[in-house]
Length: 122
Ligand code: FES
Image (tube, rainbow, N blue to C red):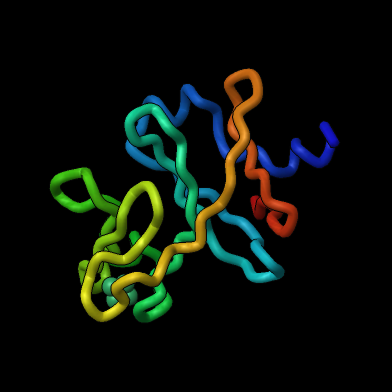
């Protein structure tokens, strides 16, 4: 189990505390993609970096994944916004659809993806 965990290390808690978000290239359910990882009110969240509107990464047009308030995730392609805690889209066209969340597990200051069908691509 410990060996399997090594291949799923998302980041350290310190890294997360020092930046607004981290992107990791992953393979999830056999598809190469990326994951966004961030902390909000001290809780770490991770989602597949894939907007359901036109299938783009949230940071495709701009090196950011948040709106100007910092209270929502935002896709930089057309500006759709998402609830930080649930990944639920708040914009009318895709209202109610959700970003794919990725479970995280923190052990000794290191965050691991707790997803069976996920491997890191480096
Ligand atoms: S592709 Fe994300 S809002 Fe359109």
